[in-house]
Amino acid sequence: MQIKRIYISSLLLLLVSVCSHARIGSGVFAFMHVPASARIGMLGSHNVSIDEGELSFALQNPALLSEKTHMQLQLNYTYYIQSIHLASAMYSHNYKRNYFAAAIHYMDYGKMDRTTETGQQIGSFSARDMYIDLIYARQLSELFRIGVALKPVYSNYAGYSSFALGADVGGHFQTRDKSFQLGLSLQNIGWQLKGFYSDENGQKRERLPLNLVLGLNYRFKHAPIRLSFTMHDLQSWKAPGVKWYDNLFRHTVFALDIVPKSDKFYLTLSYNHQIRAEMHLKDQRSLAGFALGAGLNLKQFRMAFAFSQYTKGAYLFQASLSLNINQLMK
Image (cartoon, rainbow, N blue to C red; front, side, top):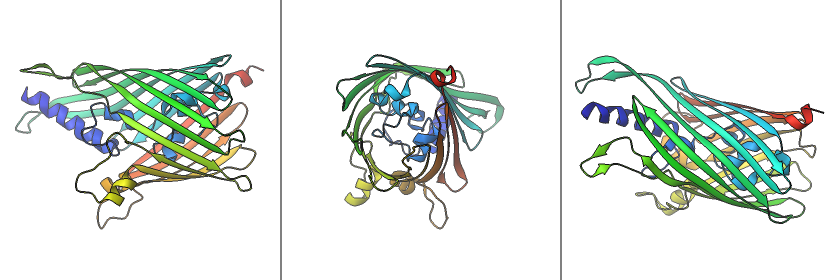
């Protein structure tokens, strides 16, 4: 029992490092907060409002599946320090005003030392997480869509496993000229069906890291600029020991896109104050909280690359490739 708790505690500390913007006490499976694609990563890890045909946005808000995501195949890869890797694959297909997608995500933390309570090394162990997204969205009108997602989740840390079932729900609205867009998403509704361990009260089951996100963006008509404003973790507003204005900004992500009229490429810069406030080390220079990236959009494929930093020496590198199967078959 003692060794088991050491394993789980070590993994939780590692997850907090990778998912620094997940609030303490928000639930197990904090890895689900890690941005799954380069496009999400460069936007500060949260965005539920941009509708531009980017398939991975449906992971943030299922209502962001649209006619533009039809027959897309997307591959995403993320590299973090200490040989931590996250990979995912997605595919979408539309039928009239109904939009479908499926995704699988896999996170590997590499090998870690197995030790006793006294610190004696007795081998090594591995840890990995996996979850699946089954997504559906429907166009209710020209301006409004809704979406839902079902998410089975599985984790295995040194032989101790857990299984959970979660869901997302979301909605999206845009004006007729698409200059203003608004999105709302409630992510990770659900609980563990099988906990990592049992105690005297039976199996210990916890909820998934619930996240209520509201976002909007505005694209200027006469300038290649789009501004995004996203508020996350609205269900857990007050952070202890933090002034009200600091608390407000810890829920807020700002992003700037440079997007020409052709939409063939973009440059993005974002700022996530929660990451900055919780991970920046005093007297140490870093870009904690900032993320930047670029992307190329062509008829047959899309490419995106993103870079962000959580703290000094802790970098996140992300790459995404999307293939438009419909266009490739022509």
